[in-house]
Length: 359
Ligand SMILES: *[C@@H]1O[C@H](CO)[C@@H](O)[C@H](O)[C@H]1NC(C)=O
Ligand SMILES: *[C@@H]1O[C@H](CO)[C@@H](O)[C@H](O)[C@H]1NC(C)=O
Ligand SMILES: *[C@@H]1O[C@H](CO)[C@@H](O)[C@H](O)[C@H]1NC(C)=O
Ligand SMILES: *[C@@H]1O[C@H](CO)[C@@H](O)[C@H](O)[C@H]1NC(C)=O
Ligand SMILES: *[C@@H]1O[C@H](CO)[C@@H](O)[C@H](O)[C@H]1NC(C)=O
Ligand SMILES: *[C@@H]1O[C@H](CO)[C@@H](O)[C@H](O)[C@H]1NC(C)=O
Image (cartoon, rainbow, N blue to C red; front, side, top):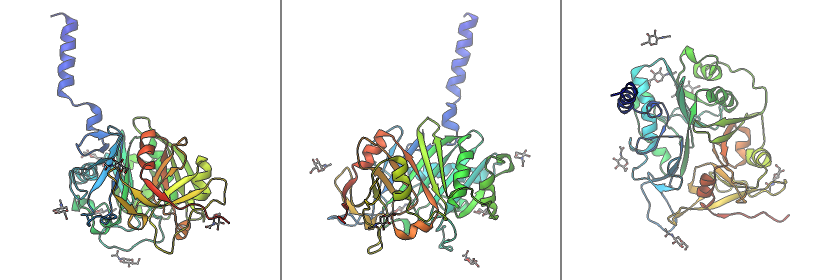
């Protein structure tokens, strides 16, 4: 055996013994437990049109490895679900009391029927990271996720309506930008751990975690370009509560230079209708159709997302705020991307939307 082949053989054996670095790092995990750059979940409502009531726990999912909607083989209350697999990493870190890892859970309606927070943003999510990599999940589910000592479960309050969740994997450098965006969100943080080694990069999150009075936010609107670990370009919109306008109509549509079709939770009699008074229009969806031809009304859907009306523009945004008058006074935001697969998947869900009123 030559020296060179010996060297190769030892490298090969090393490679076969150690799993790929990427697989051991903190990241979004799909239903097979595989690390993925991103995934998106759409939990279906319990009540669909012309169908018997479902469990309210079925969901469809797409991820960076399978870029079309698939109906999950697991229910959302199972640890094997993508949210369960992803959160498992957080619960393990919590148990091992690792001081090299940071996490934050926030929700305007925290778990366990605690006080709903009107002071904070209308925003829900969680993140987990170490100094190499981590994930950020943005979702619409009330009272979720459970406190770390409780382990994974899914709240009954999230069952009846449709819900969305997006998980994104980021390298460490992006979390300093996410920290600034979250200051604009002003989230209701209900459980967290941010060891000192994450300062100054996560200094806003550390203050939010301690429940301290926050520094003043310099702008009313915070916009940031982010890149996922595998290079997906993202645009993060975050509005503060002093920006008293509807985020879709007065900020996202003009900024993205596109007419938007919006799907968000609507309560009868309290909705905004399609608005074509500004150069970029916002149309309110009222019926959603899955790839399997089931359909459901926006009144049964608590998710919050929008897409470009024109196929050429390709924007999809997923986030926190409903298209509704009361939400203009709340802080919160959206993650937007121009991924053709994500766009196609969401654009095809819009079955019907309100036209503009002729004035
Ligand atoms: C999930 O919900 C279903 C339907 O209610 C129930 O039968 C099952 O036991 C639940 N699973 C878990 C792990 O909670
Ligand atoms: C972090 O944990 C390690 C191992 O448990 C310990 O040796 C170290 O002192 C800890 N560092 C801090 C800053 O607490
Ligand atoms: C609800 O808020 C009030 C006032 O801030 C506080 O006194 C009370 O302890 C809170 N309840 C719970 C369950 O956290
Ligand atoms: C987070 O929750 C754990 C129990 O689940 C508790 O011991 C800890 O004090 C909480 N931390 C914060 C910052 O609320
Ligand atoms: C449409 O939006 C404009 C600008 O925000 C607002 O002044 C107007 O009242 C809205 N029209 C309707 C019908 O909601
Ligand atoms: C859904 O409906 C369309 C149009 O009626 C039909 O072409 C298609 O095959 C249906 N898809 C499924 C999965 O049933």
